[in-house]
Image 1 (cartoon, rainbow, N blue to C red):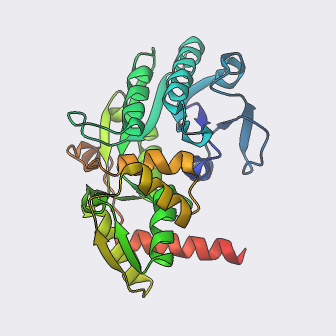
Image 2: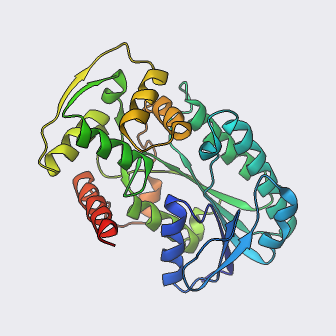
Length: 301
């Protein structure tokens, strides 16, 4: 096991799961939180904000490896790119000053030669900023992450549940490579132990390439629901985000960048990570069933 580990974004969709996984391995874990919040037994809290650099030195003290899992979309649609930029610059300076050895960053997957959405451009810029630090950075470029509590799952589930007949924008035909959240956690923990991933950039995705239409149709079939989809060319990303916001529980500040990103094909072109960290990847239908089971278990309390 490595030395002390810091998780930024510890209260988020990925951060909570990663915290539990690392604690199960016996990690010496510190979680960066903007305000006090309950943590699992064994995790230590460090109160700080990446937008307030004076709060970071204490959180970074003695850290060997840090996970960078934060994004700024939840803070509002306006200015999220600037917040992402500032947060990553502050983190990089603080981690460099503290002598952090490694950083593992979970960002977004997208064709860097294409016209990326603001969200995906911001995720790539954060990766470049982190690589400017004195530490080695592992950059995991994830496709659509699928699991209970995640925005992609919440969006697809709500649409399938409430709209048996769907007039949809063209993005339903965009190809993606959804990856189960459990597989993302396996990659994040695996990179910690596999030093050959240090300094590398890796695409991570599931075993299947699907369109969003296929994802919704297969989700509906698993739940025993009928679904009829009619794609039309006139729904802009802005109108689509309003539509998503009306039907689903996703905040508009997250829905708009998410919808804009759906026009970008997100599939893996580099599968080197599978050789370094070989494990069975979860098929999409199985990921849906796992997410539904987790959601039902949570509802039962």
